[in-house]
Amino acid sequence: MKNLYVLVTLILVSACVPPNDGSGGGGEASFLPFLMLLTFFLFIYFVTIRPQQKRQKEHQTLVDSLEKGDEVMTSSGLVGRVENVKDRYISIKLNENVSINMQKEFVSSKLPKGTINSIEAQ
Image 1 (tube, rainbow, N blue to C red):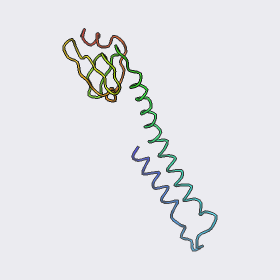
Image 2 (image 1 turned 180 degrees about the vertical axis):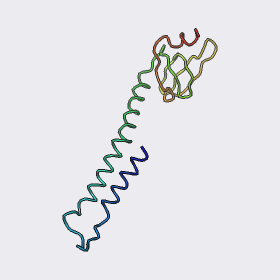
Image 3 (image 1 turned 60 degrees about the horizontal axis):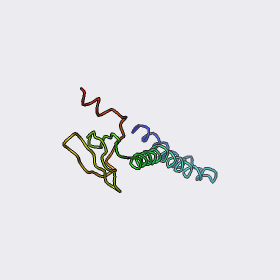
Image 4 (image 1 turned 120 degrees about the horizontal axis):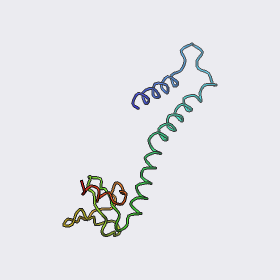
């Protein structure tokens, strides 16, 4: 991916350098640097910004859909079952004796039902 950025940057820079043929520059190619800059920003938008916004939206949907009984994995790798859901916080039961409170935003994924039982059986 880094090589692609370097290639696009080199193309943009070479398009912005005026020709050295003694013609003094022409009026017909004056829009080319603007066009290349616009292409570069569109490329950056579709490669980096748009996918990040899509991931944020998917995570927000996940956080909003949490309910009691869901099996979840936190961003730190803890696996547990949701006991209680409040405004910004949830209570996760890790095993029979351990329950933790944490912010909803730190839940990274919802696991299929029965995942915890299959982990404990091993």
